[in-house]
Amino acid sequence: METYITNILIVDDTKANLIALAALLDSPNMNIFSASSGNEALKLLLKEDIDMVLLDVQMPEMNGFEVAEIMRANSKTKDIPIIFVTAISKEEKYIFKGYELGAVDYLYKPISNEILKSKVNVFIRLNEQTKIIINKTKALEKTIAKLKQAEKRLTYYARMDELTDILNRRGFESEYELEWARAIRYNRKLSMLMIDIDDFKIFNDTYGHLEGDVCLKEVARTIKTSLQRATDIVSRFGGEEFIVILPGTDSKGAKVVAEEIRKNIENLKIRNEKSINSKFITVSIGITTTLPTRKLNRKDLIEHADKALYRAKNSGKNKSISE
Image (cartoon, rainbow, N blue to C red; front, side):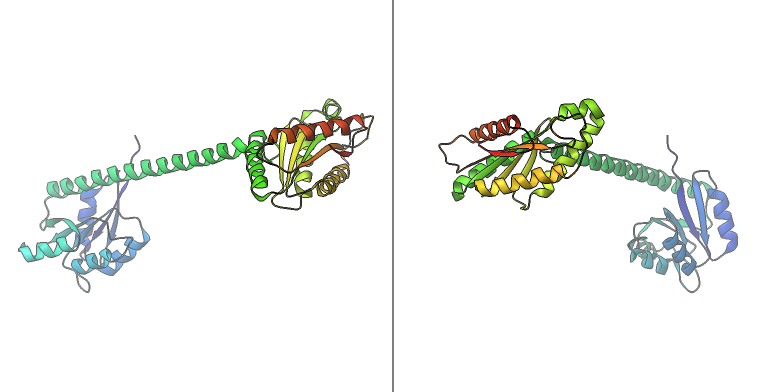
């Protein structure tokens, strides 16, 4: 079980009293601080993390009541429990004044050793319980923060491809559905590019899957940076296939974007030496455009893009062809 140390500040203008009280309270689970004046006590309270104060009422310059009043006005010290140590009258007006200033108890001089230890031990136990609760709360807050972070990550990767950091198939389906609906609402054309890395199996067989992953990342990054508008959408469609949605783009504009992507990927100069088509990584792109209506099926656009890609592959690769 974890041991908690209680920091106790003893405030008394008489040195002998400080020594005597410190000796009585000497314990492995206590850390004793002492101050011989109100000013010295206040400085220590601001500097150290004090858990409880034994405060003499009668002191020159600044008495215990004045020290307590200043403590209650400060955010760092306002909740520290105070036990007043006093030899003055036990009249109610003095007792009430102390409690109004935040006293939790009184000790009257001459101090009984048993009473002192008993009262201090009560607040030590309370302090330990408070620290246990604080530590458990902090641990719980850290756990909650980690869970929230994990939840965000899970939510993110439910839509995003972890390798390439672009939309995955699920993310694409969600975005495509929205863009199709927008195209119908605003009566605007929608273009799609289906992109496939040429001879990627040969690349993997030659250089290994780790290099294959690096290649996929570079191709995804290049496609993304080739798109000029924030509304254009790129996602990983499967293996080495990518798909691009171009809202409000006609077939001519889609062809321009496709060629920009194709040239930029070719210019990466990623070597694929065993390919018979090119010694560098290239892509083939299928292009299709439609004006979405409620009567059309949005899946048809994907099929048309896939057919155009098939034609690009069969006609020599490293080219873009419209369906």
